Image 1 (cartoon, one colour):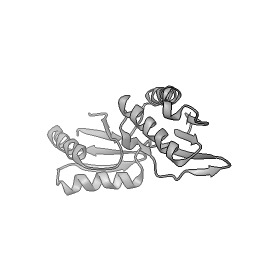
Image 2: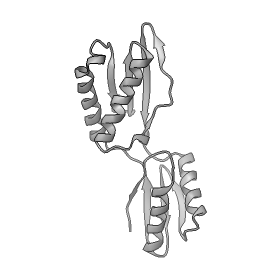
Image 3: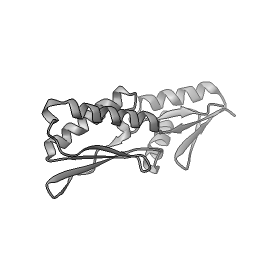
Image 4: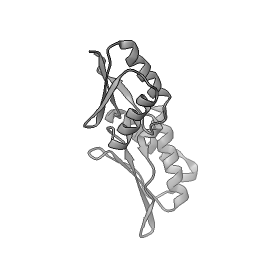
Length: 162
């Protein structure tokens, strides 16, 4: 029976390259030249830390990071900007999480989108991925088309087509 897996991954090397490019842009931008702090990537936890003096510059750093990620080919929805900036002394600090894997909410959205489209496939959640199987490959391709047009809230990749 043909099947494929739906995953949500960000290539760590591409992420690191995008953050390094953003750091270089921070050094060359005239409006952010005297900024204390900067952009840091924690590779183990996939968290980008933005530090600056005020909220306006934090938003500028967010824009730089997002622009560089998109130019490197990483979907912008892979970043979670929902955390609030926290003040610590004279500096503001904001953590931006890089989403990896499909959580249960996103898995439910994926399965619901497939069922609502009435495609003859079977979808089931497995750890941090969703496995979709069907009797015909054409039905799997229809499910992929449905998911590409659906708004799940994070980037999806379709792998292990068997």
